[in-house]
Length: 572
Image (cartoon, rainbow, N blue to C red):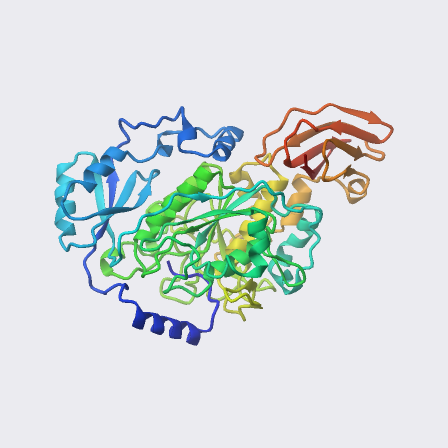
């Protein structure tokens, strides 16, 4: 990974690297031959899994999303054939380990830590097994074997207090005001019930900083997965990355510190996935991204926020792509990002900070189709010169949109809340859009992931005149919400009220002068529930929802041809 935001001074960063290099021998030795290879299989024949039994490899939340949007479970979703994996592990007497698996690409990455004969072993393997169709060197590592724990899913029954989304943002108002996100929050949508998977590294301090403790207490941190080899803890600092990079970008979405720092989706749920290699820059990071995308899909994530960028790696033999390959199809990471949209996930990806470098253009996987690549502006909507240029090589508008990266506000790994003093990049801009995208989908559950992303582009301030720096421009999330959900004049909005909220069973709707045509209730997955019976007395509608489980729901009211939506909480 090339970090896409700069959150410390250059001098401090260089000192950090100097100290680390003097203490750790585990770092790469330049000029080494590869000892990690991507092996791609031909099929998934004789799989013990079936598309008719998705509960064996997808969560109930993911399955519900497939049903909701009529997304079929196909062979692509089946796990990689374990017999093939066992066969390649047993092919040689040399110790080996699988360090990455991608079911969408039908591939694995095998690691040989103690041999320099990897190339010969892989060549023999390719000739021996008919089910291997391709091999590719992707990394050189000097790391110990480590057993990885399974996904740590820590879902809590706790309900976030959503009585108000009227926050005092403090200085962090600069992060959100360009998108009218503060008004969107006041309308009542702050991410409740939505799941955002963050792809990054260096969440150092996140689990100990007092500001973030409510996230854990409320059950908003659903868990984590560390895909990097050699470690198994996402909170351990990445020694070669910007200190606290993941913590800072995460804070742009999840913070809820009144008067100081409020993120764009402070009431959403989060899952952390380290896709970045802490020991150097290797092509295998793209394999980790692909695996992370599949984990996010299997969890039923609504949004992926990826503050990452791939360009140049440590060794010449793995620099197989240039910016001329930015077509969204060459890179395994870019292909996986595009597939996320097919599975009903909004992927928001940093466009990269190559504007002043020889690379110049967007990075991978920001070149993917059907994702939101995010460029970097300051609070005055002025483009940062470091923000990567579009378009993609096949002529698609890139970046898709832009947000505040330069001069944004963050919580750092030492617990301090401060601006980046103008050094911030697209790593900071992407989570701002990701959080607001989750809130928008919460407000408009009837739309698909592709439709939500299209709406975000259409409400960019340059939609009719896109360019290669900010794409369709800076989206106005509040206006999008007004036009597509609360399509009601202000005087009508003020005449409709839904209460009590929270409620244990009875819901009342004051409709004033309006004639209510219908009332529908949606769960957090966007599924329309059976209409609850209601009665109208004078200007008040009464509805019994005591049969609903504890949780968060969206009430959709159609009155005199207008649509009004409101979130409600059902308690026991």
